[in-house]
Amino acid sequence: MTPPEPRGPAGGAGPLREAWRMAAFWRGDRRAWLQLAAIVALCLAAVWINVRLSAWNNAFYDALQARKLDEFWRQVGVFGLLAAAYIAIAVVRLVMQQRLVMRWRTSLTDQLLGAWLAPGTPYRLAGASASPDNPDQRIADDVRSFTSSSLELALGLLNASVTLVSFVAILWNLSGSLTLPGLGWAVPGYMVWVALAYSAAGTLLVQRLGAPLVPTNVRQQQVEADFRYALVQVRDHAEAIALARGEAAEGQRLRHRFAAIAANWSDLIRYTKRLTWFSAGYDQLASVFPLLAAAPRFFANELQLGGLMQTAQAFGQVQGSLSWFIGAYASVADWRATVLRLAGFRAAVEHAAPPAGTAQESLRPALLARGLAVARPGDDATLLEVPELSLHPGEWLLVTGASGSGKSSLLRTLAGLWPAGGGQLQLPDAAVMFVPQRPYLAQASLAALLACPHQPGRFSRAAMRQALERVGLGGLAGSLDDEGAAWARRLSPGEQQRLQFARLHLQQPDWIVLDEATSALDAKAQQELLRQLRDGLPAAAVLSIGHRDELAPLHDRVLCVQRGVLRPRAAAVRSVVPDGALAQ
Image 1 (cartoon, rainbow, N blue to C red):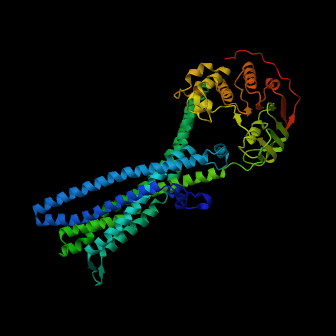
Image 2 (spheres, rainbow, N blue to C red):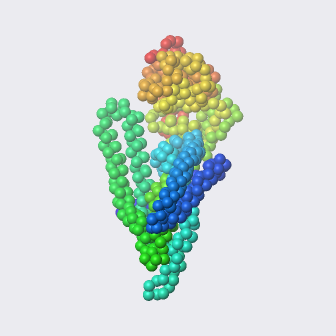
């Protein structure tokens, strides 16, 4: 069964149009055009050598037929010079082409990364109903494949076109006229017409036989990426899997993913086998077909052996140029599948742009919300109503409520990850740091993790060590430059949350939003961390999301989610936590 043909994004725009959209690199890089011009010049030089080799065939085989030893060795020398020049051209062209591919890939990768990593875009893209699969694979593998195959196919088509123009005149002159038996019609340049008919028939057949390869290649790229992603998940969650004794279940899940690869691979084998049966036979017949077509003139003594071999070689060049699509069909199918995947990813990223919400920057240093409706992601249903919310510098506000009541959704609305369903929201024009419950620790040095999203050089090492000591992680002060450590696995959940507080002490933000940021700590450590934060950043405004009872005395005001509405609760009495060493 033939899989369905994938449709292009953005109203079914064709692959060529989508490929042109991804070729912005060429519209502003003069150096790239100079490199391309040099590569084209080398391609033309290679075609010229092939033309010279065509003439060499005639002279060489005529020397053989006439048994002229001196001419034979002279032609061997000529061939050596032509072959050496062709090899040098091929090597230089390959190096220049690979460098140009990397320049294009670098530009396109930067472009896609910039669009994908716009504030909040990866989060919204992951939660979209039509989210593209495996963005990592599209940016890494698809961009590499697209840039290299685009240039290779374009140069291949150029080479075939120039070769056709160069050799069709040679073949026309060599083939002479052929009188059709029984009709008496003389066909001038008949070998050209034979090559044209032979190539046209082959092109039509290969198009029909190879059509299913495009959607099957799309599917293969998808299932391969799904399998790799599942393997990465097992690696990143190895401890949780081991503790849950989930190796067998994960093995079953991975085998299921791989079964999809094997099934689609079987389809690829079937379609490729059918195409290869034809293309292999076509190529084999092409090696002898020109000799059969030119044989009547040879046996009529209208051609010498050299002329016959030159005619066969010229026919091969013309037929090969006209049949370029046959040999490149599999590559074109794979290129088209890659373009469709990249175009789909670009369209999804563009649609995941920051939402047009109700948030506005306020000239006043305060966070204000009135009649705010927090919507569920993906639909218009209101999850939480916020009649009024205000927060001023130096004030600590706690938002509490049952799990699933919409507290974290309120935080995402404040952060602009998805728009509010209605109401007014004004955000302060000041530095805001959001601290999630589950920290993200990239594969980087400890100094880079502390300074994120800034560069480590922005802060002194003394300030970094002091920040670590304030949160009870002084033992890590000597590992600031350690990039080999997988900090997400090396640190416990509680230590990871302490590290987030170290970032707050180091970067000194004016506004802080804590989302269950102390959930992995005991009550004593939680009190000490929050007391240290209040003492270290007395002018900062803090909005906390949490549900633990012991959090209330540590804040100035408490709002509670009750029946889908955020309501004030009685004022909390701030506890006084004595100074002391942090619990380890």
